Length: 156
Image (tube, rainbow, N blue to C red; front, top):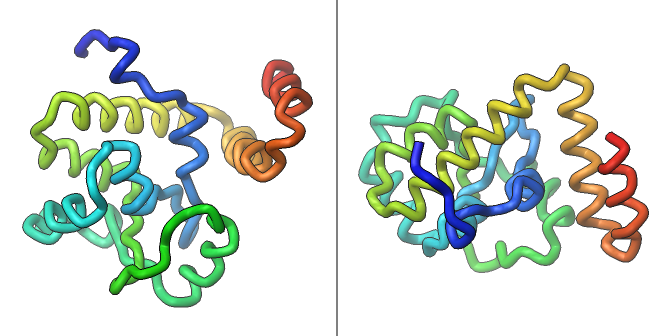
């Protein structure tokens, strides 16, 4: 595995804040992956579109309108407006497939970090990892209580 340097490492919390549970699966949406990879969403979509044969429905799917409307209020700070198509959701396996499409060292390293985080989460007991995800999302929503929440995470 390549050695990490501080420029390439992204905090686990940043990745965890991007994870959503949709259709009973933990996924990261295309615009969030593009942000983590420091790519334009358009470029990521183009890369995926050229290689759709690599992605089964278990690896990637497009949100339906109802799912999109449910998620929109949760990500009010995101810039989702103006998208012609509903976002794509990538499972852990879909993110693994993306690693074969990425040819930039920085994006490959980010991809490795994301997959390692998914693996660590999977190794937690089922209730713990779901609670951990929910706590991460609460932390995001309750930014004014950062110190109290940080203390909770230290105890966990």
